[in-house]
Image (cartoon, rainbow, N blue to C red; front, side, top):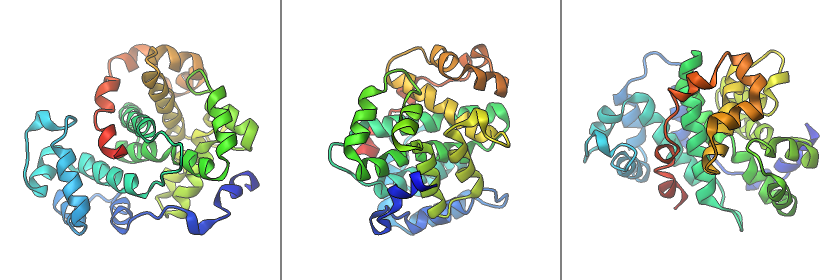
Length: 275
């Protein structure tokens, strides 16, 4: 735990999760949540509502029709997508902007990881909405690490080549990976315990006891996102970097090949969040 503590020593500088995001997170696991309730929560923050409406009309959703009002956007994109979109906007405002940080790359990786996590969760019978949000938060630990130790983070990133290699490099140089740091941040944000567990076990899923399917799919989603960003074959990258994890989840590259969304589609809105 000491390795993680260093990134939280200055608690006053930690990003704060907006109140609306906290209320949206509380709707996970509730069977009675409705589109009307979510739209009303989002409408409590006019700036958030305006951005959600703008993004609902972006390339990611535009093929479903254009909308001028938040309730119409809710009906168009659905409950899970609306909640995920609103939480993403909240996170984009909450995450800090340390000097020298490639915010566009960060959001490309976030959105790709979130999209793959949602797909894998559906395949594995896990909660797709919760998996998507975990994917959005997985790399937030990198920001806290960069704020505390910019030189070391730059060194580690320069050494990382193959998809998924950053985790072991971070563990060697920091004593923990960004996944564990993200889990601690999520815990301090009072996010749902299943989400915190998924983030924490994603750091080393194959040895986690008990085995966490949500953490395993999150790590696999991260590999797929890394490979997509680098223009590599995503299935080959998953097989090479996390073959044992694929086997443990009983997933085959052939199964994944029929389910994965194109990388370009997953990251279509990245510039909007990076702005």
